[in-house]
Length: 124
Image 1 (cartoon, rainbow, N blue to C red):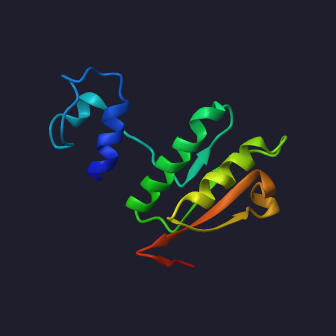
Image 2: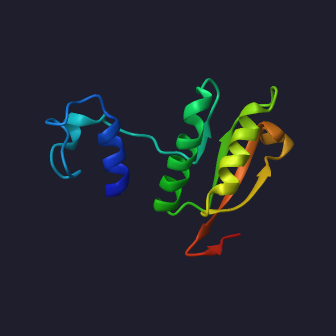
Image 3: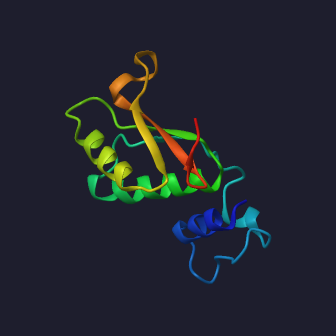
C-alpha cells in the first residue's frame, strides 16, 4: 500500500496515537478492516459542505498516487451547490487536466469526469 495513503488512513482512524503504527508492514490487519475498497468514484451526496474541498483534494491526491488517468465525482443534480463547489476546487488543483459532465447514461450533469495530469502532461 502506498505509504502516503497509509498515513492518511492511519491519521483518520479513531485509534489513539500509541496504537497507530508507522508503516503498513507492522500489524496492519489489526488497525484496518480486512479490505479497503479504493475506487475511482467519489460520491459527495450527504457530505457537509465545509469538508468537501479537502475531500476532493485528498481524493485527487490519492488518485494521482495510484496512477489513475481519470476519476469521477458524483455531486448530484439538485440545485448544483455541490457541483459549483466541486468545479471550483477542481479548477484550482494542478493535477487536474480537464473536467466534463458524464454522458447522459452515466449520470449526465450530476456526475463529473475528471482527467488527471501525469508528470506534467495530460493523459487522454
